[in-house]
Image (cartoon, rainbow, N blue to C red):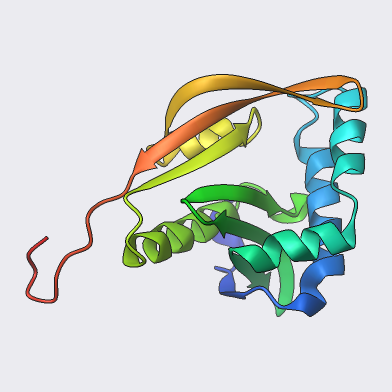
Length: 171
């Protein structure tokens, strides 16, 4: 289905009541969207490592987290931590490649720039790397992380944000 067939998501800040649904979105994204990039054991280790509602809530509350909604229900989220780190970006498989992740990235980039961030950084999964590349993020190095004896690769990527314009239009 094309992105134009899906309604544009609305965005709002994370609420504590979102935790269970966001955990389910993250789990579904890991299990279904990363199949071509990570094997069964890697996906299982990744999903198990992030299957903790208390830790998820704490992580999402520490930074700036936006939730994407379609029809009033959460379909994805993005979390920006201090220092300009995009810590999490997940969308439900039912809305993958429909513009939800791009809408979340657009919003977080604008908010980060408005807060004075000059650069954003992310450790993009192999699945998310093409999205970030298309958005102008540059790969700086490859990472390998170990989770329960499984090794997963990701790529550190950075993007220099456009300077915020002053009210008179000057940088």
